[in-house]
Image (cartoon, rainbow, N blue to C red; front, side, top):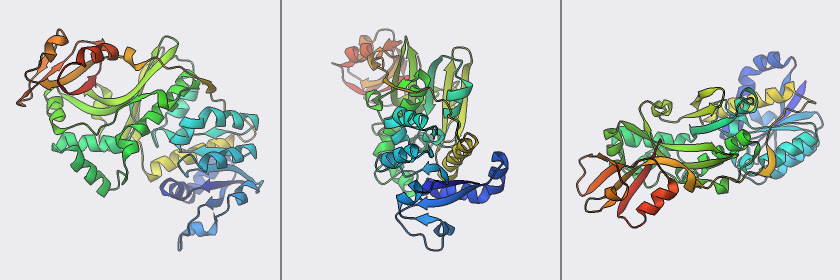
Length: 398
């Protein structure tokens, strides 16, 4: 028998416990022995919940039990998740997590600590919820040089953008509806400002490059400035507006950013709607591949955490190699990234002339013009736009 613990009994933690209660026989068969939840750590009480049989309020119960070999960290946030994770690894316990904030900040460090103690730090659920993307990057695609990763990595914003597109609603109205349905938090900044997607693309770029990518270095722009007029233009161009996280290989490094983007109908991400996520990966040998599924939610995320726990059980005493060194990768400045840009400007502005050979777009909105620029770098766009009366800009695929 292998004993495990779950730290945190919120949405994901309760989901992990449910996965074990529901699929216990199947999990045991796949491992070849019993995998049992010995502790669930939470400060709260849950009267009437079966978890009360294994609930503890004391982290030391987990640390001091040598029979606990695997721990799920689903607490969220940096503290005390970092301290608890580190102590578990140093005590010879593998840790599996969905905590993208912790992985993005301390991933390389915790992987090395795990390696030093002959255990594993696994984090499939930290990006894409139930979508398998971490393991493919770390195993199936290791023979490839990853040229580009682009994805819809946040279910909340994708739901909101889908509603704005389909129903012609403004941002504020859609946010209120998303909060009422539980898709958006009361304080939604991590989602709507793009920070959540930023941490996730940092993790993916770290795995693609093999070095630590600091998410603070990634240019990030959210969806809060989008209006229903932007979606009128998008429909005219037969495009969808998505919050894309993109990382492209440039020389020996990568250039990464998060921003709203116009996605053409022919692109596989065009049809990814509502709370679903998708990640497109291009390798120099593989070509293009796409990973799609439920990017958030209790059971999809819990399934990924439980899957890592099964993997950890199969590798007791063995280290799963993860190519992620603590040496920081210096990202290529975002000013060097190339796109076409869709621009809305005041009708009396000379904006179109400043950008040369543009494609004009008429969405029937009075008092302004819309156009698509030729391909240019972010730096070139900024230089041309700095003295013009620009209403808004959205990036497009080059």
